[in-house]
Amino acid sequence: MKIMNCPLNGPRNISEFVCGGEVEAMPAPGAADAAWADYVFLENNTAGVVREWWMHAPTSYWFIAERDTRSDEILRTYPASEVFAERQDFAT
Amino acid sequence: MPFGLLKYGFRRHYPARRYLPAVTELKDSYDIVIVGAGGHGLAAAYYLARDHGITDVAVLDKGYVGGGNTGRNTAIVRANYLTPEGVRFYDESCRLFQDLSGELDLNILYSERGHLTLAHTDAALRTMRWRAEVNKHLGVASELVFPAELAKLCPELHLGQDARYPVMGALYHPPGAIARHDAVAWGYGHGAWRRGVEIHQKTEVTGFQRANGRVTGVETTRGTIGAGLVLQATAGSSSVVAAMAGIKLPIRTVPLQACVSVPLKPFLDPIVVSGSLHVYVSQSDRGELVMGGSTDPYGLYANRSTLEFKEGLIAHILELFPFLARVKVMRQWAGMADMTPDFSPVMGLTEIDNYYIDAGWGTWGFKATPVSGKRMAECLATGRQPDILSPFRLDRFQSFEQVGERGAASVGH
Image (cartoon, rainbow over all chains, first blue to last red; front, side):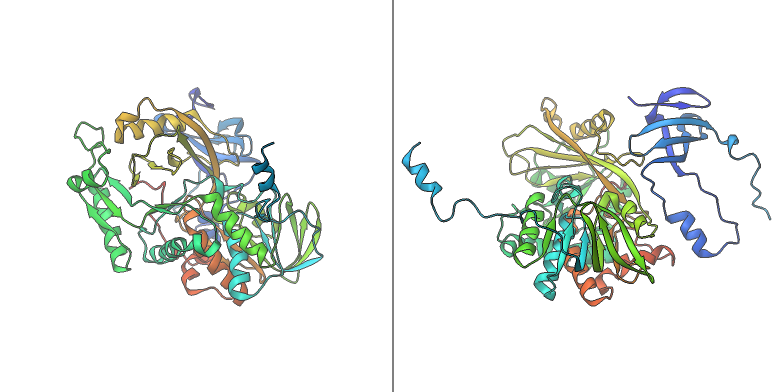
């Protein structure tokens, strides 16, 4: 059994987690179609250390993990607030 | 030593014919360099030579011929997809497969078994009916069958109501087949080599030289070579190779695991698939049950196997065939599947003039080997996207014209 350390719930079976893809900067809401196509469909698909969104499904808790995609080694997990300090406002 | 054996050794037909070329020096440049000596790359080289008379071609591979996903799939050939674009494309591949043993003068053990995609819910049954109608419209044999007929087509299948997910019906596709995947790569490689193509194994591409928006040279671990055109056909490593050319792809590399049981006497004729249970199983000519499931839950560049995968897969296999409970798993492996968001391949021209791509083969690559080779060869020879490949062009993601292929394996229904 592979274990992932959830910042909220501690070490849990990796089958309880869902990978949400690489952490990338979102385009501005009014950005060109090409920028949105890139953000939504294209992938860096890095062979190496990546920073990814993960969710602990039973608690719906989203956080960030650093993982090596060649060795499947999970290097570090931490709350998303370490990276995203401000609330994104979509109203404007 | 018995005399008879010695006499055999001196015969004209001994040793047996060589399938692939011995190691030779790389030339300074080639008209076409193909990166990746799997089924797709070798098939493209074969049809370039056979149909277009282009033989100044080098096929490079960092490993050995057919050592990637060509030898790691579950060897199923079928055309019962959901989108008209997909059905037309895979149907051409099935037809090429049917004549391939003769064409390549090598027995690829092509075996038409019939293909059953089980439905366990009303929603799945509706999808099967949809697929059957699309298939029939395009001349592909597919029909919806219900448990009474299923019991005749596959008497071993557990059809009782005591299953966790009882079988309600199935999409029956009579041309569904299995083949020996290694033989397909060797056959295409051999045919290409006999026509003058060079195949260089253990020759890893490490970068591309670019000038004026074109790729001019290919850097390898055995030196740099010039290239008129470049085709990449590297499956799980597609993003890594494309990044060397400066191209970003709509692909995630995700492991796809499979396993085989110990050999059993032949008992299972059709190929049995369940999208809802994430299972596909067929019995090979060696008697082994070849079993696969869905892709791993997250991306990885590794061929490792996991216990979780086998627990899930085998629990579902036993739902369908409870009498297999004491049969042992003999081998297990994984391939790195290059998954696209719409479960369709990425083929043809790229933003670089003389750089062509054959990627995004996820869980549907082996069955497309002949058609992708033939049509990519046409694409390289003419410099134009063939009509049949037009839906699969790389820039469909920029114009929001994806081909949502929910008939692909590993897609739940």
